[in-house]
Amino acid sequence: GAVVSQHPSRVICKSGTSVKIECRSLDFQATTMFWYRQFPKKSLMLMATSNEGSKATYEQGVEKDKFLINHASLTLSTLTVTSAHPEDSSFYICSARDHQRKVYNEQFFGPGTRLTVL
Amino acid sequence: AQKVTQAQTEISVVEKEDVTLDCVYETRDTTYYLFWYKQPPSGELVFLIRRNSFDEQNEISGRYSWNFQKSTSSFNFTITASQVVDSAVYFCALTFTHSGYSTLTFGKGTMLLVSP
Image (cartoon, rainbow over all chains, first blue to last red; front, side, top):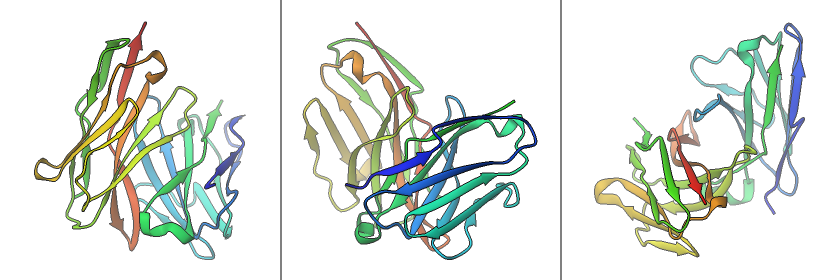
């Protein structure tokens, strides 16, 4: 149980295009999902907290118009990188909290999406 | 402010050696959780352990053991008789309440290289 999937696992795109990354909780409902970014050999940095049915909460320094987050259902959150540029190349990881087990404060992580912008 | 410090950037050991990964944290919360994750080259985070702030009992799981000491704000991780498959980046993480939500802050990670 508590499986989170991400799609795609890897994407290469041209500069100026937009890329959508999906994060799904497969066997549980997630009212809250998180999006992290990880540069090579660096730690995970929280980008935003996504709540079903409401606007995402972005961390300081993260451009809301650049990284669009939509959490339309209890099992799906999407991150869209708009007008991507090479500096947006990174490893993006989502996580989800099980609505029924939130007392443990545990987040279940997706396998990550490696974005390369040419 | 919440902070997790993993002072060891990289550790290299030879197979069968024991190795301890250090984690020191800072928090203002009275209730919090600490985690260890393993990140192999594939990138996927693998959950290893969760510990809440009220449970200082040490834990052993196979070759893995954890030492939680609230007095020194440390949550160290020891691998006994290391194996090549243990090579990965290991992250220590701490929950904190932020903008009304509980989320995680990660240490910078320790890369463990186990050679044959």
